[in-house]
Image (tube, rainbow, N blue to C red):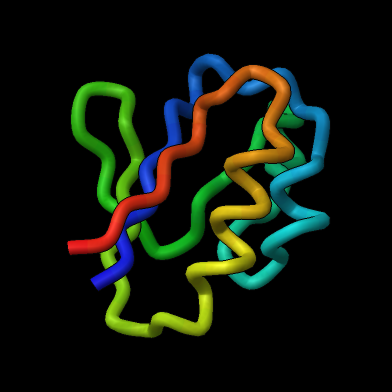
Length: 76
């Protein structure tokens, strides 16, 4: 399982994650911050759990590109 976590409140709206993984991230029109799609929120952390390992590389690239290091990707 691929587990992607986003600390959305720390987002600066650079859009790199959307460029790297458009299937998992999009920018909010309301506040200009990223949204991790299909997630559950818990205490400011948004988590996506997916059995689709095809998203792994794109999400890892998004994590590496993030200048404020608010995206983590793990395998479970």
